[in-house]
Amino acid sequence: MLRWLRPAEFHKTVWQVDGAKLVSRGVVAVLVDLDNTIVEYRQYRTSDALEKWIAGLKSHGLRICIVSNSRRQALAASLGAHIDVPVITRAGKPSRRALRRAMAMLGAGPSETAVIGDQVFTDILAGNRLGCHTILVSPLSRHEFPGTRLVRILERFVLRSLKIDQEAVPPDHVQ
Image 1 (tube, rainbow, N blue to C red):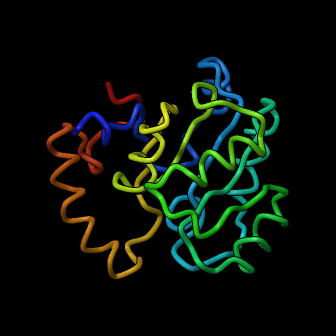
Image 2: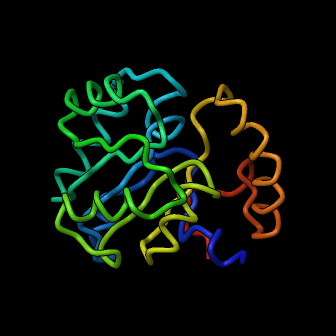
């Protein structure tokens, strides 16, 4: 079971995910979570860091889609339009359906797709079940959905079991 929860990489922040390294792995598409991955929870505003990171990925020819469990479709779509990235909300992760839909939109298969998110039981599990390259990042903020806070307790146990300490691990690959 733990193999489904193990990310291929761990980074302290999403901004440390390098487009050139993804391309060198054969990645052509990036599916990225929204809340607490590229924006703070329910703060659907762009930032200089987000715009710079997206531009960097695009400069390497990567195609990007935001795939979020959020129900705030209009706000998420507005953010996506501002950074010129398609958005899928109400994804239902760890279900794979929305990830498959995003890969179809971007013209990519699982082996050439990276899934980036801040949650093991949604983002990483969904991506691993499809055979994508998965990247776990630390949440941008401690403010989050109350149910997520409860799941974080179990997530910390799993990360310790996988020998991933989100406070101590340098921003390199987890193997």
